[in-house]
Amino acid sequence: MKGARQVLRWSGVPFNAVRSETVLVPICPLDPTHLPALTQHLLSLGEHDRYLRFGYAATDEQIIRYLQGLDFERDEIYGIFNRDLEVIAMAHLAIMKGEGKQPSAEFGVSVCVSARGRGYGGRLFERAVMHARNQKISLIYIHALSENAPMIRIARKSGATLERDGSETEAYLRLPKRTLESRLSEVVSDQFAQVNYNVKEDSKRFWDFLAQVQEIRQGVRKARHQSAE
Image 1 (cartoon, rainbow, N blue to C red):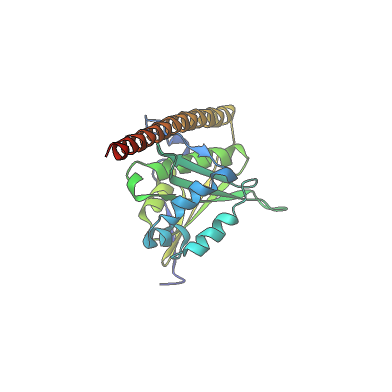
Image 2 (image 1 turned 120 degrees about the horizontal axis):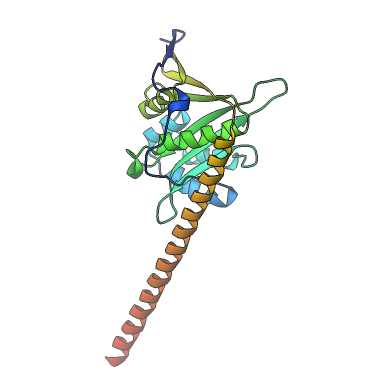
């Protein structure tokens, strides 16, 4: 019922005890050159997934406006790519800084259907937390529909404070101060992601070249066959 606000203090794993799984996941910081891949990813989301991600069933036009409004200088946009360099999961860390206000950030994430069940949403959140912490941001905020179980699970696992207000849930996670270890971890994470992306890019270029060669060969064979008739 609207107005009946419930505060849920999760006593699970504290933030500083959260650890990534054994397998490394390359998470790339994105820039405007990745907008086509981001557009393809978000437009591929179904109606219900758009509803969970944006809080409403966003139309294609609304998604395009959202993408056009991304501030890559202020915010951090992260992506996980498959072998075809398609974005299969993305996160948006919106930075909020104001005069006399405590620096904070809001986190949003989306994962395509084929890539779910691999913990990508949680990994993206960990990566966003790492950056926020290193930028001296002390609070991360998540606004989600209460039915968005994966997002709520991510917030709970991090040790965030959850406040439920009817169909909506807000989560607040206070971050510890940055350390030399956290700063080095971000550098290593970015380098690993860049190397992985470069390898995928080279591999895709190679296979695209082979596909073109095969297409040319088939065209030559077809032309020879027609000339022999």
